[in-house]
Length: 464
Image 1 (cartoon, rainbow, N blue to C red):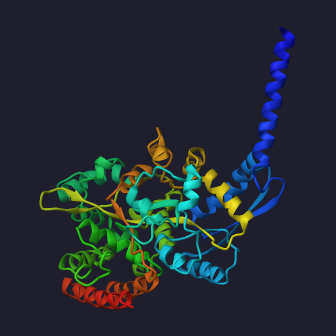
Image 2 (image 1 turned 45 degrees about the horizontal axis):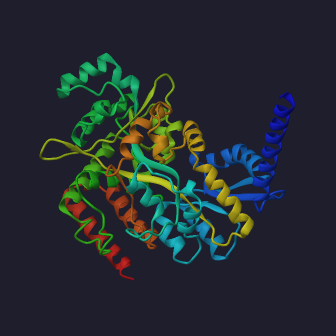
């Protein structure tokens, strides 16, 4: 009996060994040394996590599972110059960057020239890439071009949404709470729960900001991105429009006039400008880094900032709450809120050779495993897979995940235009809106004139 048992055990060991050899042999990269080159966003933690986790974890995984050595490299550029860096390389038909972290709005501009791979076939051949996404509207924004089709060009690398960060010490201080209620007649939110903030509309938020704006103490109610750089000002304005039921264009007809330049959008644009009076000096130039600076140095009690920046939004001596944005109170008394969708998809270089395509495929399969996505979340990234977001304890992993999960629900956030002319459309409104924000006339009438001008220019761009 012992001999039989020994034979069975030996046989199982040999089967296991040969199964492992067979699995390695099935990889075209077995025994090779390869490089996986990623192009991402400079100074952006979700991008750097791709390289960090790739070098640390994927390299070991690929060696163990597939039998090859991989070096993960990372090139970067700031938001406002990343597209140009990618486009210059791709236009030369270079495989310099195998995987690119792209803004979702670039899918049209990158796919139209044939620079990136349409991913439908790759997903069909790799079931692990056919992820059940938490938000269909967000996943479509990161994947689909043109809108409404089934053509997939990207996979969510980092899901993101604009939320708000607030100082816990100011909202829990009993003296502050008593003084606020005496002045405005209602209680400040007492914790970071969605329930505590769901009734905070733009009017109530304005009162919060007014109350905490104390220039003599170098303290202000809020800090918001008003910078003309890239899409910073646009990202801050859209939540006002969308929450009030407005839109910015009709993707079906490709028209802007009559959609962007409505009376309601003009009212909300004027409201957004008025909030500058509750920001630290120099608000017109504040970008993502400026928000971090204003908030972490104690100049601002609240801050509109991307969920992706959560790990940088810390104030010494107090907790920071990540909470949902304020919204627009409708006639029925309910509050509607819709934030700007951020985040970036992976796109795959169409000029990769066979080995490069294989390592990209292996990496993406590894990246979208629940284990990897959970690790990404623990390190400060924001995943989009439903299994991970709905897993027990997810909201406790980061202080901003409760708000992130709420604002990432279908209908609670939207993306910009998906059109090859994205850069032109953006430049027109960034220029006009920045001039309005810097001007002395913040009236609704002037806001309407600004929207009329933008709409006419964007219609002309889209008609080309």
